[in-house]
Amino acid sequence: MLIDEYDLELFTPPCEPGAETWCAIARLKVDISQALPYLNASLRGAVYNHAAKALTWKKGGRNIAFHPYEIATANLEDRAAADRVGEGLIKTVNRTWERREEMEPEFEKHRRPTPMALFKLLPGTNCRQCGEQTCFIFATKLAASQRRIEDCLPLLKPGFADNLAGLKSIVIDAPSIG
Ligand code: SF4
Image 1 (cartoon, rainbow, N blue to C red):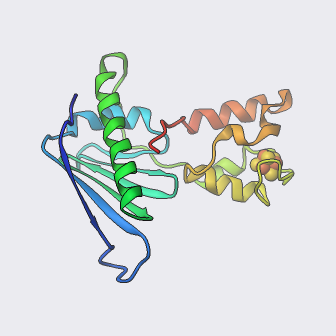
Image 2: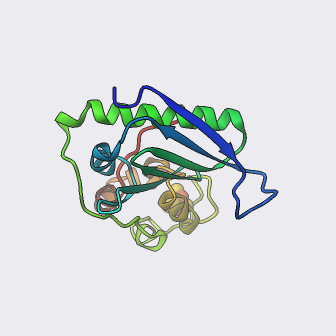
């Protein structure tokens, strides 16, 4: 296990006094920089800067930043959410670190796919089967890791096999962090 102890600090964002959402920082006792290239290889939509030892990720509408001795999360509803998400992120780091022998680390900087790049690969019929009003809204949420490719059922039809393959090549499935 890489991380077996951490302290969780909860605070309102200094740039948004009075905000209703909270930020949290998990202060770690160990340097997790060696795990970052493996997280970069496995987390959908992660943006990694190897020189800066920084990896950012967006999950469930929350911005998350991994640094050598801390993991910061924004847009948390309350202390319970901070505890749950913090614990999920620590498990994600530990699980990824334990699987490192089976993985290829990635040191390259990735860009998050834009909503427009994703939209171009969607069926474009605005059929609403995914529960969104338009394909572009779905693309925006897909780019923010708030929806999954499989939520667009028409994509699973044979006529869209190339589109599905194209989306899967730029959107990698992410583990759940609660
Ligand atoms: S289900 Fe797919 S095709 Fe239909 S609106 Fe949603 S994204 Fe567009």
